[in-house]
Image 1 (tube, rainbow, N blue to C red):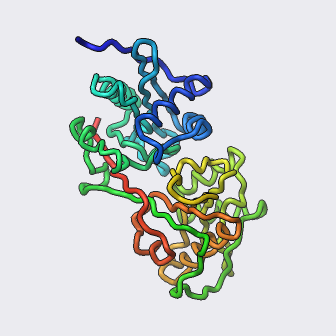
Image 2 (cartoon, rainbow, N blue to C red):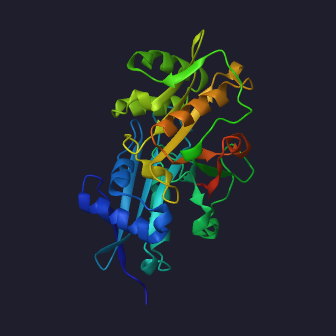
Image 3 (tube, rainbow, N blue to C red):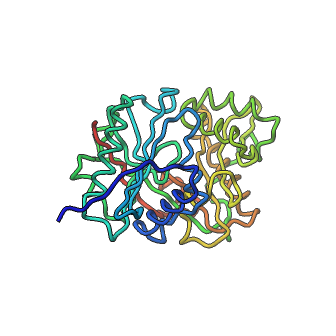
Length: 326
């Protein structure tokens, strides 16, 4: 007998809708990928310049699934205008296998196509629940059947990315660390213009945008570390603490000892790379987290396993980055 369900708008301003999304995601994804109300409320608010929508699925009047989708038409340097994101999709286990997830996914794909998007990516949006499909959920086959593959608009090969993690309780710099002609320290309010100039010069796309968004929503500028040399800012990285404006739960650190922290994005000027500047900036960020009592630390969304391995980080979670033409 066909199951009767209905889709309705999910209102980010409605606490009941937010609570329902939390319960749905946590039931579907389990404790290692649990989300909090703060995290979901934060993620459901569109980033500046983004366009985002969300839908709930109701079965006998009970919320059992939801999907969120977004696109970023404001600036092609931040995201390709042809790309849209399925930021999150989840259905409670008791309601799976009844076509609800497929209906939610199809609705989101149709909405993205109507915005002019030519492809949809699972995760990896500007306020990401995940940077891709977590391998531990064993859901890749479900999305493969619906046309999602590990190729993007720019790459014909399978894409995978990692979170890596370490316990900083006993952190010490690696023996390979080199002396540099510069100093890394927490950013101060007077550094704002210099940081912007560095980012516009070296990372004018998403990383520049994310810094501007961090400041716009009231984030502490001191959550950024800056690398100063004789010519000014030559690198920066962002840290997340448990009281940062960006929810620490975004990095799913639950298997790590508290207090939790996160590091990244991190980058230095192109002509400083390969000379130890990036390692020095990373070490300064990790030492700051350590001195602030952080134990469990995640560096998210990376393929640089060998580089971070020198600092004691090991693979923590793997994601498949799946895309589908629309």
